[in-house]
Length: 122
Image (cartoon, rainbow, N blue to C red; front, side, top):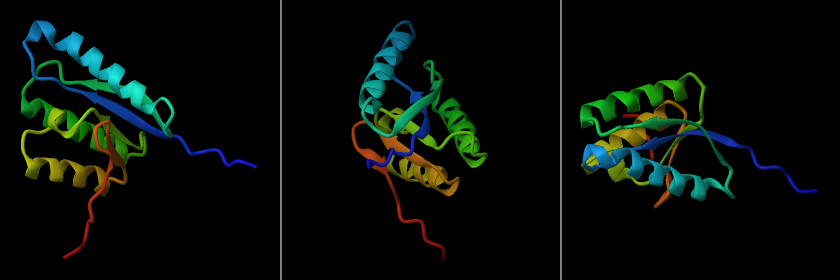
């Protein structure tokens, strides 16, 4: 008998850098890219958060809201096309992955799959 995979409920985060008149169209394409990726995997998109062309400060605020939903067990994780959509530097990328993991969730990128870090106490 085959075991059924546990579904991992995730929020997709859509973010592009483009002129404002093109943002919605490009975020829609990004959503299709993410949905195609999850089609035959254990992930299920249960919500969407869009950057809508806002600043990096807004991305950080939205990210904290997603992490809070993970902490409250409302979702299991977040899926993005790639890390460059949520950060513009490596240190911030590590921080964002660590925030999700510390909240008990996962972060998945379409380009790299499930991301993980070794979180160790000092």
